[in-house]
Image (tube, rainbow, N blue to C red; front, side, top):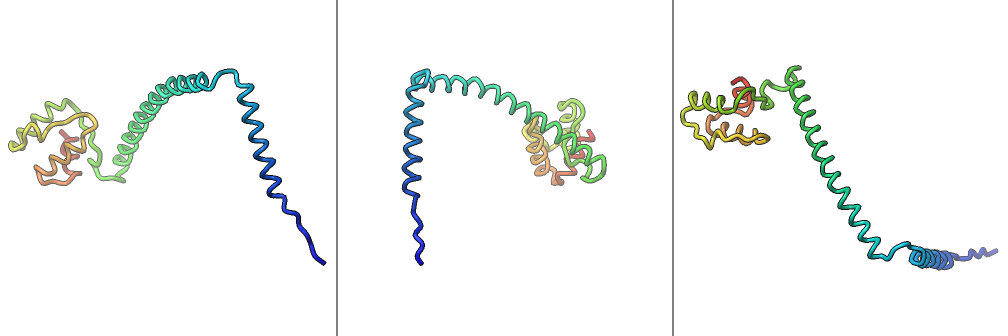
Length: 144
């Protein structure tokens, strides 16, 4: 007894290609605008939404940074991280800078240059100049 199984894969492929071709032709005939007009419409929508997407991403980044600082502070308070593991200076930077210059006369203005968001760079420079560890420098700055 022999079994003969008919191979229909060629017919299926031909039917799929015919259906796709018919769909493309129908889409071109029924489309309300020319292709260039549709493309311009898509470009306009992309430009419009890219601005709001950028604003949302910035807001999300700021929210995440605030939450991170909050949780880092909570971990410090709970004693799970060492005191001074995050930079949290209180007061005017110029006042703190003056105190540091009095205590460490060899520090220059370049060593004590500080900008928001660049605390790690400041800590790194002070580590090099004072020969102390990161947690020591951070704690010292937070206590001033």
